[in-house]
Length: 72
Image 1 (tube, rainbow, N blue to C red):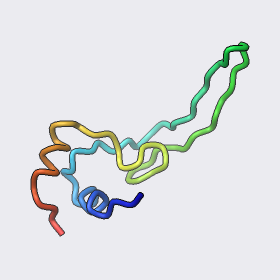
Image 2 (image 1 turned 60 degrees about the vertical axis):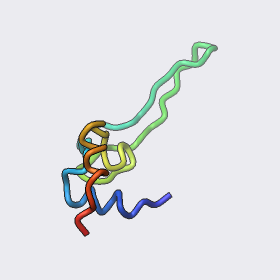
Image 3 (image 1 turned 90 degrees about the vertical axis):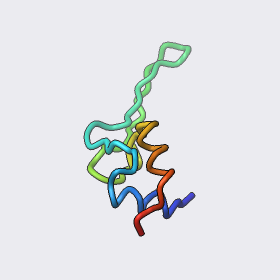
């Protein structure tokens, strides 16, 4: 689902999101039979990425960002 206001706010900064710029979302787990699996994820890079999207929210700053008009 697209959210144009969310992406527009992210371009202006101060949107309450902390950009994740390194690491990945690869997951390794062991099932009930003791077999270990690794699911290769995506790398985090500056800006939008498939590992973390636009980043991780800072609850207070995120709420404050949505309480004010977007600077379009």
